[in-house]
Image 1 (cartoon, rainbow, N blue to C red):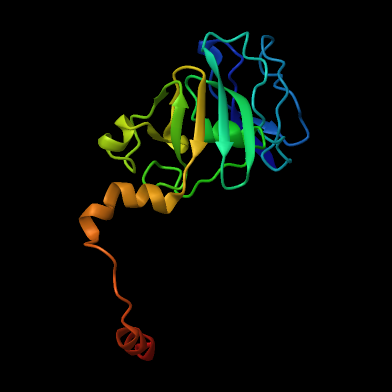
Image 2: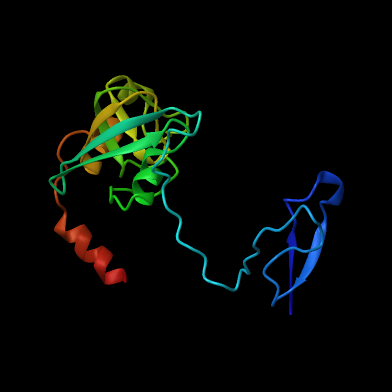
Length: 183
């Protein structure tokens, strides 16, 4: 069996698809290229967050999350070009989430200090963003921030409650019984 991978270490003129026997761990087709090749069949090392951010040109910010539901406080560093939720997960920090696309309110937080840039946060209205609400799954830190998790139902009510509800809803046991009978 042979493994076909691109050789990225060779010069541009040498760059092409090359076949390597599965027993070969190095690219010997070029004197410039002596990098180790790993097969996709082998176990890949787990992805871990980069902890040394001093060598990169992307600014990093300290993020403090007060998780009200679990009663814990998390502090971690997040590069300005990384989503807060993804970076937390890469550091084995568990935060609430559901869709990961900025469409729901499961990862909603209230910003206490600092700024979050969230151009893809469709689950939070502009009005709520102005009041300091943000979504961690599509939020980028613009400064050191301190946030507090929110109850998903509460945020949903703040955003949509006035449109869908006109006061308390009376329970209709007869309608519920009919609905259950149809199943």
